[in-house]
Length: 414
Image 1 (tube, rainbow, N blue to C red):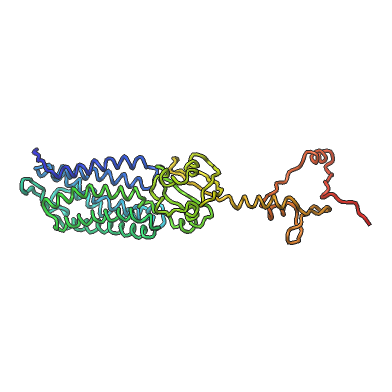
Image 2 (image 1 turned 30 degrees about the horizontal axis):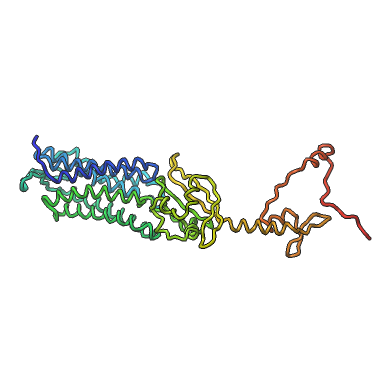
């Protein structure tokens, strides 16, 4: 077995090294729903980079074919994986059913069968030989009819995935669009390069360079997509529920970075969403030290500055779990001003409450009469909990027929 040193091997191997680090990165973030597809794709990128390096380094037909087969496996499997992940979210399902998955896998299964089991020539590759191209020997292949079936199918799935992702991303608020759209653009560029190779627009050294570069590009594009939640698009309920809550909600991921803040929270903080998203909490909330302190406590009263005044708030820190592990936090900010005003009003009203000396009912500001417990609930926001005092308990235990007076009656005067 003879080998040759091809500088393009360094590019392919660097892509494999980068993808290896991405596998570790995905494993550390395995609590996220899209971690599985991210890690699986990066593993395939590692195999593609090593296999393409083997193809470029070998001067013998058999070894070069092994490298080609292994590198092609990624382009067969990845499109099916991506469409299987993206489509259920578009259809608002947890996952695709068995029958759709089987239908999606028919063409890839036949391709893999021809690639690894059937000897060459076959419907995928009609001929293969090593040719001299300058100082290097390289593999020269003539594709068969099934190769074009596989290519049209795979690129069709990839295009459908990118269209679905793009449609979902463009519906997001502006701060969430840029990075996921860059990831989609990177994946589109990778596909266009491979289309150029298959159509013969890139040949020889250009083809090898493009393939090596796409190994790095695919790893990078998938990292951007995973890092900025392209596969974890926010649900529609965000605008229907979260944005309309009277409570401020700020969500953080497991790395302590701000993921989102609803309209009420942005009004409290008086900062645009673009200044918070994807920023470490220590940086994004640096102007609000009480909020950073509240991250370490379950419930904390804080004072937030509003111009020359400070207003009272209560911040509740809630751990968000996924798969039994803490995957982030949610800060719930509640304005205490209405509650404090209600308490002050209750103290004011409680200083003079007109109560009937006969039945014990209280007179409302409108002139009607209500039970004292109802009056306290409506006028002061206080809910009365009924209990029995010790003296009444003793009276009842001595005489089960005993009933307390409903009010203290004054003597009747004529």
